[in-house]
Length: 83
Image 1: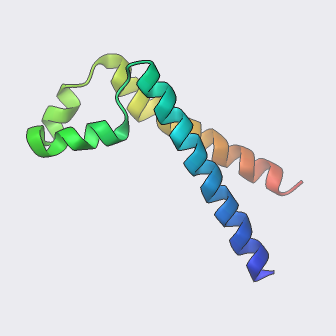
Image 2: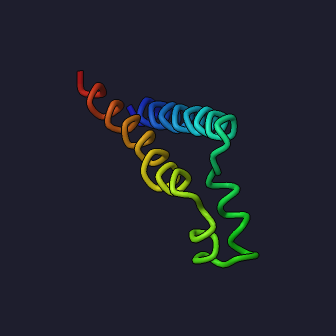
């Protein structure tokens, strides 16, 4: 039982990782900034400078769409886990 739970959550982790890789590839192909790029600018500009340097679409992507993708994945996993 414990092994099954560990394997299940390891599988969830892999699903999230794969989704993150795909989201990053799509965002790069669309010319959007990724969290990795955003965090790399923070040492040079500070957090406020990094945020102020973002375009509107990048703000929406980083703070709404990107976490929303993972929220939907978790919602889907929890919803269908009990069935």
